[in-house]
Amino acid sequence: MDSLIRAAALALASGDPLGALNRVALRDDAPALALRGIAMAQLGDLVRAKALLRRAERAFGPKEAVARARCVVAEAEIALVSRDLGWPTKVLDAARATLERHGDRVNAAHARHLEVRRLLLVGRLDEAERELAELPPSRQAFRRASDARPFPPALLTVHELLVAGIAMRRLRTTVARAALARAEHAARDARIPALTAEVESASLVLNTPAARLIARGDDRLLLLQDVEALLASKALVVDACRHAVRQASTVISLAKRPVLFALARALGEAWPEDVGRDALVARAFGGKQADESHRARLRVEVGRLRRMLRTLADVSATRRGFALAPRRARDVVVLARPVEEEHAAVLAFLADGESWSSSALALALSASQRTVQRALDSLAAAGKVHSFGRGRARRWLTPPVPGFTTTLLLPAPLPGD
Image (cartoon, rainbow, N blue to C red; front, top):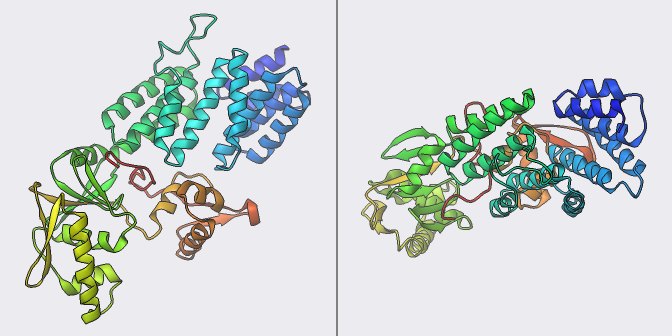
């Protein structure tokens, strides 16, 4: 490695892409192309970065397997930032295996972190935890095989951010706070402003409202730690974030029964009072004027709800309508999203500030691309999202909702799911 290449690599490692470009901008050899590609990615020109990395990968000879694998890892990171969730993960797995075989544990760990970030992004938390468990969890454990030096602080920061991200999605706020404290310490050592900003942004999630509590006519905002405490309490919770009814570890999902959940939520919001039949018809069947056919259908749906909730509560008839009667709980509350939207899940992904394609959103939401496109068109007509580009290059984005965290909007399981 010549002195300019080494200096450019050190500049990139310290978060100085312009310094790296000053050293290799006019060179077209394979190492310089790779460094230029990474520098352009750090500057935000992802299209140019991807082209340079592919040129570098082709320019490296067949015997330079490690260099080619590093280019693949860099391209995978660009795909993740670009929200290209269909990027072939098997290629990244092969590159990681190559790096591990040749003793490049730093870049191999970075490759695994990229896969964990992708799994976390689409809500596959179990797989993300398994992948992360393959890496050492502490600074003391991050050691090279050849010497006693720790891995770079930047890598440690990313690791702790992933630990915190999974913990927040699992509603383990104590674990998340500890991981963020370690990430903050590592970010200070790394001295990379962008990384410090990422830690600060992640920390804000714990201090911004994550849900609303509706109980006995009151409506107040909750932090993540409050949601965690609520779900661990003995209260009967009608969970409008995951469309379920739960008490402690018992969870009854109504995610595929929207009419039943609408009834459960209406009864939960009114508890301990009852809800009139006309009001229940309006909530469950789309605001239609109640007639005998609607009342008959209401009786059928209430019977179904009563059977599904029989272990947690009864749905009793009153002179006016129906009321929820918990079997063991003393309180009934409704846990709702901080901002309720018709297409809240789509907005939750777009709220990360990155640009998404409709195909990536469909993959993340486990929905058809046509369904996602209809949601995007509706949101665009309302002025809540906007797009740029055409055809396959079209991307959608929106600014985040100020003052709220999207943790409970994203499609991932809560404790007990």
